[in-house]
Image 1 (cartoon, helix red, strand yellow):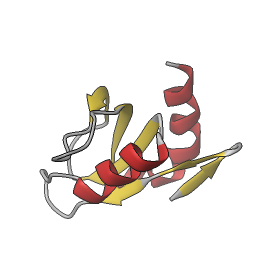
Image 2 (cartoon, helix red, strand yellow):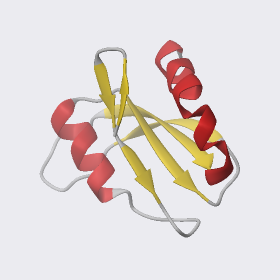
Image 3 (cartoon, one colour):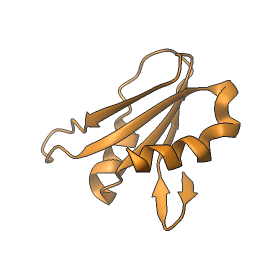
Image 4 (cartoon, helix red, strand yellow):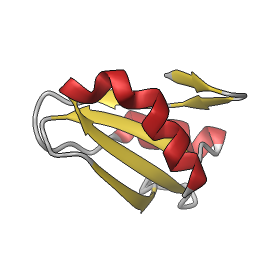
Length: 84
C-alpha cells in the first residue's frame, strides 16, 4: 500500500504480464478505494475498472499499471489518477 494525502492506495506487483488482481480487488471493494496501482511487465496504462468479486457489488476504481522501472514515479502518477 501507498499513502497519498489522507488515502491508502492498494498496490499489487505481478511477475508476469497478466493476473486476476484478486487481493487488490477485495481491498478496493471493502475500502472503496478510488485508485489502485499495479506493477507488472506491461507498458504504462491507466483505465477505469470495476471489481469482479463473487457475491459483492461491483466497485468502480482507476487502475494505474506501471512497469517496475517507473516505481519512482508512483506517487506523482497516483496524484494524476485522483485528478482524472
